[in-house]
View 1: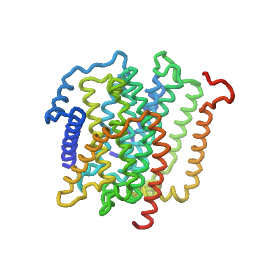
View 2: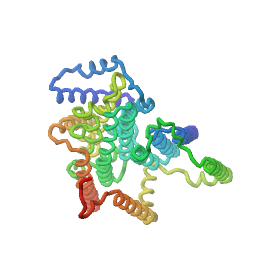
View 3: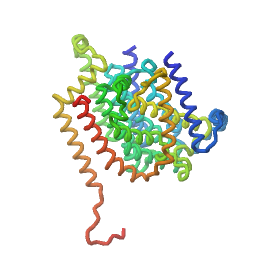
View 4: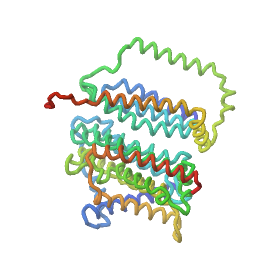
Length: 174
Length: 298
């Protein structure tokens, strides 16, 4: 049953991910990416990583919606009515994609799963949350705080770039 | 068994909310009115706009309904009456509510109409304003309960409900929950007087019925969330737990519908400014105060 759901949500994630590039509507593309990520969240749930799954499902909804409005704002043809092509650098993408598949298949084939499976028996969901909390406020705190501050800096910088500074002494007609 | 009981409870709640809204908006009280209105909507022709994004147009009402139902699924009505008692339940409520935004964006974009589209994007602005005021108060609630299990959160409020323990969090969460359900004064996405019903403008017949039902479910879910997080859930003397739970949910829903009369509408940028410059600092202060109180053993 678990294997079935893992396969199902994994497949759904891939199908939606392909959908991102098979459409030329910005809205459909953004939402396909959202549902691909949501399927990954459901995959986490199926793999008994409850907190991570719920977090993934929650975060992506707002993030991808905000991405959607930027895609619609910046593209000349957000509805995709002009038959725009969403793919580019085809040969490079093809090679990179194939390389990725070979790499992942290789890792999956050469990992000794028997030892791993017994060593990492999933803890109960509430215990997982407790462990995650201790990890985030312990060993990994510096990593997360650094990432957080970096993102905050980028946000402030982006806003500063976007804000139009009124010209000093010039006319304010326009 | 639980699923059937909770389903019936939810249906009763939706009906009561529909009656209340009818009473408050039109001043009439006709017990059969929501039922008749529903039948009328189902029987009416469901028009599809001329060049819609059919996929998004059809998905939106169903997604809105599912988001409300999923949020309700982890909220307990009594110690045993809960559909799924998820270990990350409090977070899951928020995860489900995030898809209200996705549904409204779809409903805005789908029909290819100007009013609907403006209204859909408008809700995105509203989400950016209120979303932190949903998450941060829930964080403070979880700090006190030391758990994300919704049932444990209710038990943690024994003797001292969260509305008294962290009143600041309650006020912020309550205002934000009005914005989630796009109830007045935050009914910008369906701005009746200005955008010809906004995201609902192009929906008719059965699709509109599902969309409106979704919003009713959302109101009941948010009322249930407020009850569980701040009003001690099923706790209370004399009556059986489920009766207390249901009474509180209905009372909160009624107050949410009434609030629109007494709160002024804000423009988008005013809402954003108030939420970010005042709301978020207050929410952070709330987390800090609750943290100190928990550490002090209060």
